[in-house]
Amino acid sequence: MNKKTYYLYSETANQILNAMAQKKRQVEISVDLNQSTEVFSLNENSIVFDGLSNLNVDQLRKISKKENRIFVLKDTELVMLEYWNDGYYKLVPTRGAPTVEINGVKMHRSKDIDPFIDAREKVREVVKKNHYVLDTCGGLGYTAIWAIRMGARKVLTVEYNETMLRIRKDNPWSGEVFSPKIEVVEGDAAIIIESLESKSFDSILHDPPRLSMAGQLYGEKFYSELYRVLKEKGMLFHYTGNPHQARHGNAFLLNAAKRLKTVGFRKVIPREQILGVTAIK
Image 1 (cartoon, rainbow, N blue to C red):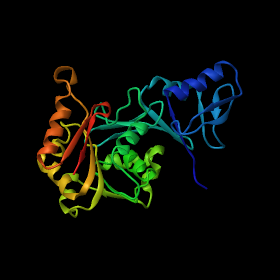
Image 2 (image 1 turned 180 degrees about the vertical axis):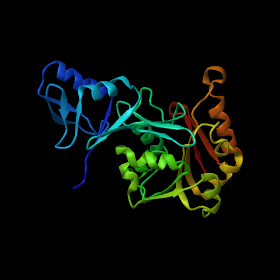
Image 3 (image 1 turned 90 degrees about the vertical axis):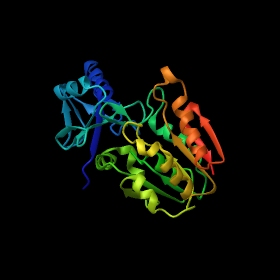
Image 4 (image 1 turned 90 degrees about the horizontal axis):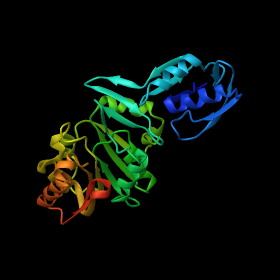
């Protein structure tokens, strides 16, 4: 029998504690990070998930106090989803899908937007039915998932970070990335792309970490490789973000657009509302 895993964070814990304070016998909450809701029984001092798993008031208060943290309960073990490797990683809750944070830097837009929906907007720019898609920096897998949902026949997704691959397995929103239509390659995109066949992809999603973490993925050398592996009339969406906007406006995004033009893309369209650039070969 598969053991069920329950995901909780401060907002969920507060819902349970408030229901207890009101002497309710049941509470409806999400235990899969906002994908669905279920009804669970309450008693005076705990919530009962199943025959093995429950949380008492002290445990719920601990979760409540840890904002921007996600806890997972499996059987009787309650652990925080945080990871130490080459830095500090944590899965961070939102009102929709979680994002991931590395050394305090969020890897998705999450202010006023669900990171999963943000991924959909990026994919919508370039992916069409039956496309073969290159996803250069897979992260939690959201863009690859949306590419398949939008009709791509296959996605090759590259992820360099071993910890990120582990977080995918712990994140319920990443489950579809393990589809047979998605091929996961572990390694450095800047190296792997050199081995890919020219003019082999219908569309490319390039959503690298910020410049300070992966500068090689913003340079003309890498952009030239993106151009090479893309089919004629193929489309690229490059999420750039817009660091230092207060001082320099859209300069970072526009400079990336200029470099894409320099390596040969015939049409380059800044997409400032989603902080990126669409380019057509």
